[in-house]
Length: 164
Image (cartoon, rainbow, N blue to C red; front, side):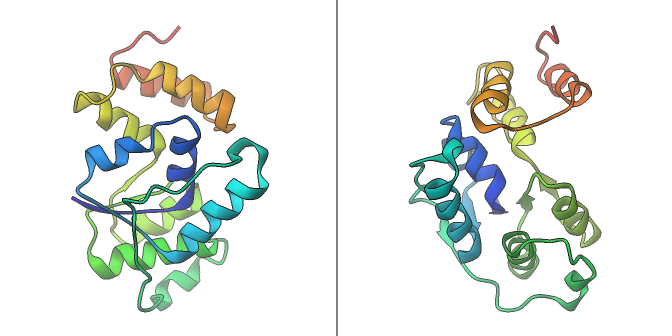
């Protein structure tokens, strides 16, 4: 499976020590240079992500062009824009993205999307993660990852774990 990742999924999973799940789940994980730059910038300036390093197994690849149809989404940041363009260009199996605007643009362009929570569910189903709940809690506390109680409950139910 070939996936393209935006910064947030990699950054948040790296913050809690679970970015290795991406390598375990997907054969080929690619990121545009703008995503690598954003990751490094966050790791050097944001206290939550201080001193994180970008995994060396991620394949950096720039999109050759940005489809004009993506200009209909002016709120996309450079990483999201490049990640969606690259996913379209290489016909990736999925785009890893957490932000709503990035997900909406990707879905409008017929890309399959997963966020960090979807990765956790896939990892549990594949036997790479015994429990989702501790990682979900760690994401909230250490990475400042926000999700509503409704979404948290939905994720825990999907993982067949207690919701209390």
